[in-house]
Length: 101
Image 1 (cartoon, one colour):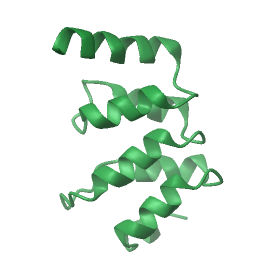
Image 2: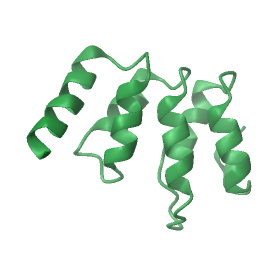
Image 3: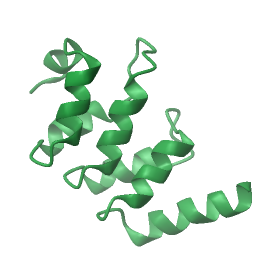
């Protein structure tokens, strides 16, 4: 599914796709980016992407990075829970939350 096809879908459908463990890494990568239209529901889509075990490691790493302009605490926490997130990234997330609270 290409980026244009994804943009035309409802958020409910995007969430369903993002939650599906059979969704391709390419589709998950496309869904990982914040909706440029500022749709608040894109947060749910990105959380689902962060939790999906098919999400590529480089996408998980970017989603968890505080240097990412789309960074969000809840999404970083969802990335931390993904079994494929590298230990180094998990440790950075934990360290951030330890310092923040």
